Image (cartoon, rainbow, N blue to C red):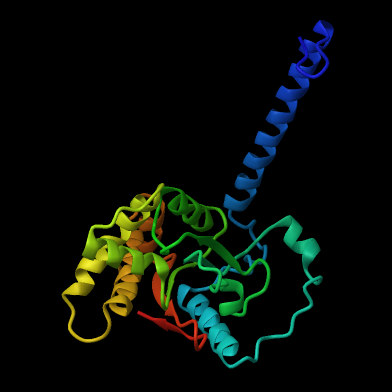
Length: 244
């Protein structure tokens, strides 16, 4: 029986339409992956993001310098929309904190299609975010993964406070904080600087280290030197990103 009109005669046709629509969507998604993964045809120009990892890092850091100096590139955002509707060629994949004051496209002065961004509080590597970064490497050809922490990170601060007081957090927050606590423990051994600042830096370093050993896709691409993986800390007050 049809779930919409309760007419028994409609059941088969609705099911076929639903099945065909789902199948078409699946085929379209799969075809998109195949096109993205296929190497350029002989004689064809390389994709715009077929650049060395060091060049990709240089471009995003130059963009950050423009942002910090309040001299960003002027852009016509309508230009290139048709091309972007066909494909994307990000020069970097960014793992950033979900903090509302951290906006990677602005921080690195990049336009639409230039960055493949995944965000989560505390900029930690989770399974789902790792899968997204794998997609950026495998199918989009992104030559760089950049982990971006930031000053006064609330997630890192919460990890410090729970470690010091054994406070209980609601919901799924304990899972998030548990991923940051090892960085807090390492920061506690350091001399000089504030515990929060040291833990923020250490957390970025730990996520970079984890990505470098994240098999199979990211680890292999890094070992083959097809990509680089780096980390930095964004200072909210100055707008500057410092590589760590």
